[in-house]
Image (cartoon, rainbow, N blue to C red; front, side, top):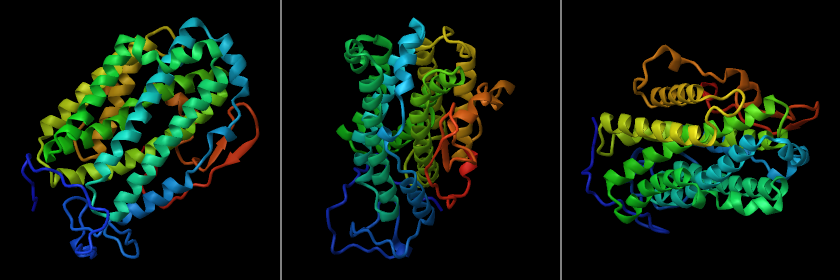
Length: 354
């Protein structure tokens, strides 16, 4: 039986230490539990979180260990449209990981199951490392006279600024008014960001790599892609649990998905459009709606987009560059025989469903 709380309930923030807390697994809950706030992990209620945390930790990597020297030359050989898209997407992805680094702690502060809290702590760490990766790319590949343009791209580009403000506004609403209703909306917005907003950007870099361009950048984004899929896995577990507790409607979820898809298509068509070989406005729409359907199924809902074209990816030929399927434990340079091993756990079932 569902125990749905009132939508105006104010979300509490866990104390640093609660000596009167109860960490017994039979009384443990992801939200609204009575946690001591100690990491009692000898016995857990949500065993999936233990496997996922181990997976996330074993995915550890260091951006500076990846060779991006070829990209310095390649960048100067990109077309004007390709450089414009490269800079704009890099700026957008920097925003996404920056805002996640700031936002996740606010949601984590109300988590009362330590094993789940640990996963969110690792997510925060990974988002921070992704921001370092973008800085490494910009400072190494982008010429000095263009770097500030990349960092400040969101200020000058009205479409990107609008995109950033739309995403941030949802999170800010919860911070300003921390009700249960706004918490659920922010949690859903996190799932949309992790599950939809990065991927047209990733596709752009894999597209360049498939044409023997910017292999180092694609290598880095391949690792970021893998991290983001572990975050998707986290929210695929949290959202169904949240639906049992927080006030919401299925219509609200579908509306948020449709709005997210429209925003993502508008941005991608603006920055990439049909000006890049292998990417069109039509393929962007197909891919984004295809992803949205997958994410909806993963939280137990029916697909939103019913056309036959939305049942398959138009970029399946680029999957070999993403390295997020069965061979995810190895990372090979696209155009060399050398392989760097990043050991990954196989302890999380369903990993291939991404």
